[in-house]
Structure formats: C-alpha cells, structure tokens
Image (cartoon, rainbow, N blue to C red; front, top):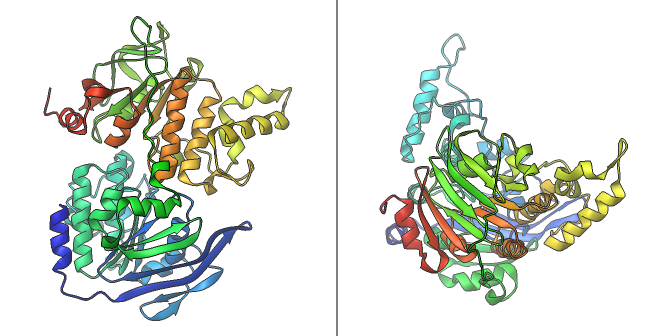
Length: 517
C-alpha cells in the first residue's frame, strides 16, 4: 500500500497551489487560552497531517476552519480572499467538509438520509421527496468507497466501524475543496483503512486539500505530504513529511525526549497457580455474537482481548457487565456463581466497565469533572436528604491528584477536557466503587501518545494493587505491551490463549483471522 501511494503521489502532474492560510489565530474559552498565534497553510492535492497531544488545540483550530468557532484574532485566507465563516453550513457550502472523530449521525434515519443530510433532497412536481433518487445517489457514494452497506438500512443497526464509513460517505457527498479528517481510522479494520487510504489518494489526485489528524504514526508517514505540529495551543513546526521521522515528530509534539515517553512497563511477576480466579466464565453465550466463551482472570492479572472488529469482544464484556442478556453459561466471582441481569448487579459484584465510546456510553458531558468521577458513589455522600459536598470535593480532588487528571478545577465541565483526561476521569469513577474486576474496552482509543502511556502505567499500577483486568484493544502493540496473557477472539469464540512471552503480532493475527483453528 505504501509503495502504491508514494508512486501515485510522485506521478501527480499538477503543482500544488495554496488553498487556505490561517495566520495568527487565537482563541480562548472562559478566560483559558486554547490557541495563541497559530498558523497553517493548506495546498491543493496534498495531505497535511496536523499533529499534537490531546489538548494541543488541533480540534479547536479545525472548528475555526470549519466555521464552528470564530477566532478572537488572526486572519483566514481562502482561495486568495479573506473570509470569516458565521456557521458550519456557510463553510461547507464554500467547500470545507469535516469527518469528526465523534460520530454525528442520526440513528433513527437511514444511511441514505444521513449521507444527504444538509443538502436539498430531490423532489417531484408536487413537492414530495423522490426517495428512490435519494437512495440511488447515496448508494453510488457508498459503492465508490468500496462499502457494501445498503443505503436503506437504519444507522441504529450499524456497528461503530460501519457508522464511520457512513460519516466518510456523507463528507464525500459534498464537492469539497478542503476535507478535514479527525481520527478517521479509529474504529476501522485494516481492510477498511486500506480502502480509506485509496479514497484519500483519489481525492488528492482531484486536487482536494486534506487535513489529517491521527495519533497513529504509521498512518501519518504513509499518506501525508506535509505536517504541522501544535503544542499547548501554539504553533511549533511545519515541514514536508520526508524531512522528519517518528522519533523527532513525537519529541516535537510532547516537548521531551522519546525515552521519557516509551517506557515499556515491566509487569509484576504473577503467581496464579492454585489460586481461584477473581473472574471466571463458563460456556457463556449471548443472543447475538458471543459463543461458548470460557475464560479466567486472576487477581493482579491483565488479560488482553484481541481480535478484529466484529469478533465479539465488546459484546462479551457487555454480557459480563449485564448490558446484554446471557443465552447460556455462568459467571463466577471469587469462586462463587453470580447472577448478573443488569449493570447494577455487576457493580454489586465488584465489576467495573469502561466502555468503548466514552462520550456516548460513559460520560455525563454537561456535568462537572467531580460529578462524573463520583457519579457511581453519590449515595455514599448523602446525609438525610442532602449531599455532603465538602466530602465530595475532597474525594474528587484525591482522584484528580492520584490519576493526574489535567483540569482547571474539579468544577470544570468534563466535555472541555482532552480525550485522555476524560478517560482517566471515567476510570476514576469505577475505581471509586473499589472493584475486583475492571473491564476496559479500547481504553486508549482517540487519545494522544503521552496520555496513552499514562493510561498504560495506570492500568499496570491498578493490576499490581490486585485488580483483575480484562482489556480489549485493537492495537496489537498495546495488547503485547500491557497484557500478562492474551486471548484472541474470532467470530464470537476464543481461538487462542497466549502467554505474553510466546505472543507476537503475527501469531495474534493468524488466530484473529481464523487461519489457525
């Protein structure tokens, strides 16, 4: 793939021209400076990687570019003329589209309706929508990106990966001159990522300027032409991608040596022989994808759950946590069979669950950091009919300090925190119930490299203190670096139980694809 893309890039006949320039862009929220004197230049037919840790200001800069926010100072020059967008629709009508990291689809509408949302639906002479044409247009766009989804399918029935493809199709429905992609591959399989890269290359050849935000270095160096690095809301560096390397780029992003960042955590020595497992499943199946799963997780053990999208990993942890009913099988905690019919039952048994989509399934976005952290334990702070806010403040502050959650104060709304700090706050909530078992579903999805390392260290620390951890991750280096043991799922079943010392990326992928049975 990389060779193909490079060959195509070199063969592009047109010299890129500047499409958009942003100069001296500054923006503050509630007195906190988010961007200060930032600049970026986009050229036609180029992929421009925007790099930086979570909280560096990347999303704010892109929202200004797309008309969501207006800068407090600075200029935007688009196609040679100064512009100032009043809303996202105005920016989109002028050729700037966004594929957001967080999905923005309407679940109760069809794929076709979502793809063409924001456009004028074709109508007949009496003003009725020509639905056949809506679905035909949408199907053409879906087919163009290699998707086999049916445009008439409701979005609510789709997986996260499938919804991401619909987001991409919707952005491509507009004839964009600038396309902003914010972590577009976070929920895609390798095959879907390959398709996306070919689409990006086709758009590049059509002269589209693409802003690509990703924390995956291999992607950045595979498809990008140039890069810009932000740090703490300020412009640090811009250069052609061939003039840098992953080590230098990470050092520029975080402002410290790479050795400080990539410290491989050496897990503590486990002595689990003759011990009762904290969590044991016996022949567990659900009514959808999970089939006859048996596994054990011991105190102090981190068990990684690997597999491709659709293998049934998320469905398994949801079944353990009581979010979906069991069709058969048993769940045992500390050597005792338990009945779990709801998350309340799971919590009472000492099971905590950090879901895959923190914003949709885990956080209360319009509530404060402290309220999100202690939501599961509010009852403990109740005296008579009132809450003891002094105790709540002290407890929240303790978790903020222990987990290193970066926030202006505990009263700050959690929606304004970076992805990594939101995730740490969500983990803090479940630690507040003093669990025996921690279920983690993609714990570092959508967080930057620095935050990812902090979360890895936190997970290992929790295990060292005796917690039993079952962790789903689609990133094999993460699975291999953090886990003591690795279970590989394929089509709803566990195909391998590997000790860390015997596991390799190649071996995991063989089992995950069903090559070894």
